[in-house]
Each structure stands twice: as C-alpha cells, then as structure tokens.
Amino acid sequence: LGLMSAKWPDTIATTSSNLQFVLLDLDALGLSCALGSSSVTKYLMMASAFPAAVLWLVLCHALTMPRCLRKWWNQWKWAFTLNTVGLGLKLAFGTMAAIAFKPTMCYKHPNGHRSILSYPNTFCGGSDHWIMLCWGGILLFVFVLGFLVLCAHATWNLPRWSTQGHVHKVQSFRFCTSNFRFDAYWFILPQLFRSLGFALSVAVGTNIPPAQTALASIVLITYASLQAAVRPWKAPAINVADTAVNAGLLLLVSKSIQTDADMEADFAEYFTLAILLFQSCT
Image (tube, rainbow, N blue to C red; front, side, top):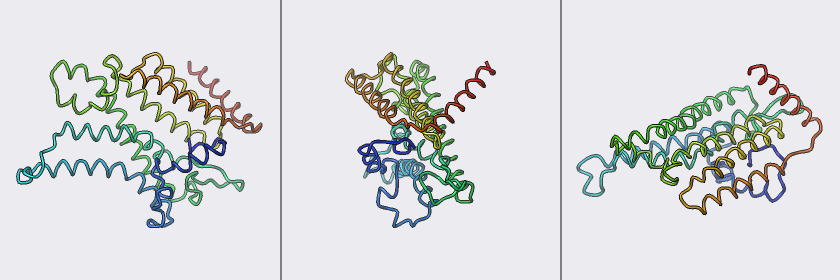
C-alpha cells in the first residue's frame, strides 16, 4: 500500500511510512548512512537479502553433514531444510514481488524526465536504472515466478507423491499444505497470486492512480470471493479474519481513489482501448 501513488489519509500515510522496513527499506532500517547514498547499492542490498538467506540455510545444512561435527549437533535433513526455505520464501513472497517491481515504477517530471518512484535521484533509462532492472529481473524470474511455478508443480503432484510413498517430497513442501484443509491444500496458489497481482497493479499504474486502485480492487475481490467460497483455513476463526482483512484492504483502496478529471479521462481512454482489443481478440 505504501508504494501506491494513491492519495491516502494522513494516518494511513504515516503508518505506511513507519512500516517501510517490512519492504527492507534501508532508510527505515537506519542503514542508509553505512551504505552511502547510491541508489544502486541500496537496491542491490535489498534484492540480495533473499538469495543470501537461502544460501545461509544451505550453508547451515552443509555444516551439519561432516561426521566429526555430529557430536555437537544433529545432522539436518534435506526435506526439513527445503521446507524451511520454502516457508521463508512464502512469507517473504509479497515483499520479494514488490522489491522486484521497484525499478519499473517510474514517474514523470514536469520537464519530461522520469525517475524511479522509490529513488527520485535515479533517472529511468540511465546506466544505474539498467543495473537495477537486471537485478530486479533476476529476483522476479528466479525467486518470485520460479517459486510460484515450483509451488504449482508441487501442488499438482502432491496427491501422487502421497499415494506413492514419496515421504521426503511431501515433507519438503509441507509449507504449502500445513495451514489448509485437505480438500483445499492448493490454496497457497491464490495467496501467491494475490501478492503478485497486488505488486503488479502498483507497478503498472505508477503514473495512473485510478488504474492502480482498479487493478488492486480486482485482485482483492477475486481473492476474497474465492476465499469465502472455499474457506480453506483449518481454523474457522482464520477464515473470518482473512475475509475481514481483505474487506478492510478493499475499503482502503477504494477510499483512496483520486478525483482528477484529466487523470480519469486518460484512465477511461486506456480502459476503453483495452476492452476493444479484448473484443477483437475474442
């Protein structure tokens, strides 16, 4: 929500700015002085946090493998290590998606130049911007979309793995199913698509806040409708809480719609073109 261009009430704007550390904002974490003022350095540090965390867990697993060290600690099992990695990526999925799309979020200055929304001193199209785009693309395709495809593959094959006795494969993807009922074990996919869709809506409509709010509302309504129909969580109270949170997010997004006549006219024009293109394709 803090990355959206929509106009928020002062309370929401203040709360969002105070919670930017969730997106690994180095300024909010108080680390900007140690790393300098370079936007590229700050972004690379943020985007590298997730690969570094995965490598750290793999290194910890490797340190438990030598026999001479087993008298101090037990050897880790690959299934549990992979499950821990998957759980961490699942919890950080929305943050990863938002950080991956940051270099694509350019806004236009009155003089015609464009800057990155999160790094106003970095102009879009320059060498620094291309470095950030390449690193964000790696994060997007390897860790965001790659993790999404891996979860989809596991969700499709989990019933077969269970019936064939592939215990280690099932344990490696326990993070996908542990919180959901057996008949809704696949609901991790709508969760991931919601996070990805919300981040994508923010990136697509950087210069058109009505497009942001419209796309974000579609994502939230689709997820909320599916969640209300399936009620996937094991605990009934979590189903109620999840519905309430989505309703609250939808109200916030709807309340933030700006009333700018020129902006609304541009949005209506783009939306009409999109409908005509869709009709011509179908």
